[in-house]
Image (cartoon, rainbow, N blue to C red; front, side):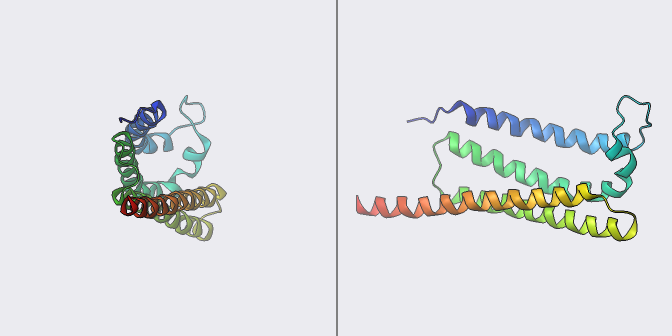
Length: 158
């Protein structure tokens, strides 16, 4: 029986769009940093505080790509009806590690910015968001792991 939930396909398409958006943001960040107030593409957060944020942003980009790749593989597995599998647990573990590492970069960036320059609360809020995302993924991973154990026990009974 083939899995046919359209939301999985839609989510997979959104993840693949995120590959492009992340790459575009890598190129756009320096351009947006140089924007002036009267420019159409002026964003206060990036133009004013970009010089404090650019290095931490570039530090988390590889983590973002790693998480996107794992999410892509996870969704492909789900579309192939490979749901309760240890490979998916490994992918969820990698996503969790990426979120926690990005959180660590965010916290370190916030501390450096707060000490050396001035406080930018957005950085710490992003770090907390990344930590929360890691927590959510970890809970899903634990549920999936428990489901695999139950599935294996049921397979042994039959």
